[in-house]
Image (cartoon, rainbow, N blue to C red):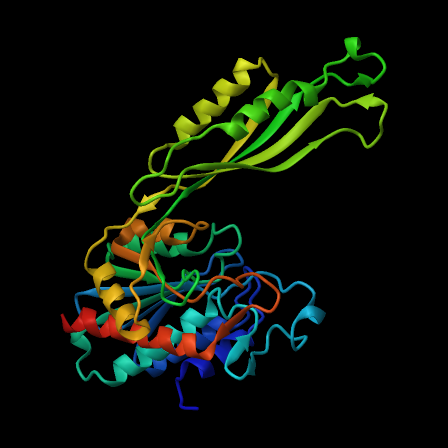
Length: 380
């Protein structure tokens, strides 16, 4: 196994038990790797989150790779194939370990591609490559990439190209490039009634009976048909609770949590107004606490999309689709300082699952694609 190969780097990265927001030493490893290639770094640590801005090269054109070393909890370790999620398990090229997909695999692939690219270049003035790596993407995301973006804004640093290594592939590796993401708006609802004995409903106000017509209407609304780049807006109820756990009391309130994943045909205000109209229609006594975590965005579809698509076609022999579905990503922050932005990485089918898995073949192909992208950008 050669020094700097994707699997060697991934083996090391998986060993860091970097559950959000603890990087567990993984960013020290990455920054040492960058300095070994002649690069420099800056740490933007905030609260319990660690953030790394690394640079290599001194050219005027900036390409940035963005990602996160933090992972979700492992779940029952006994259900993992080797009972140790933080040790890479390799059987016939099938790689298992927490974070191999989301997204230490992509970080390893890029580090390997970067090493190969730099070793072939004698003039650092011909390129500038940045790594923006955080330990707070799987959590609240309040102290991670957003803090690096604020720091780069202070220095008036704009990225010509930004690639986020999120696992975007769906059915086959290489089949999807993300060029945007939907917005996310959550409502925490309380509907108030009047508690009392269930035998005397005339003396009570049952919040379950009062709220159900409004909740049913909301669940049946067709918010839009989607558009060229976005799927239809979706509202989903996540939690619904009421009652005291007994059968002879009408409860005093009902609580519910719901979430919009919405496209560019809506604003936060328009969705909130529509929900308010429905609840007001049924004359409910209610309170909604709104939490908005992401605006929808569509990146500029230009040369980076073309370059990445050609690199994928060259390696994978297939043409990727451009999509905006899935959950939120740190692209919602990076779009503010990026002229062009895409997300591209491994298959997402096992992300966050027990026995999170990729293959050595896909990992090597991802590194090859990243290397081609760098070559095409800085040879252009």
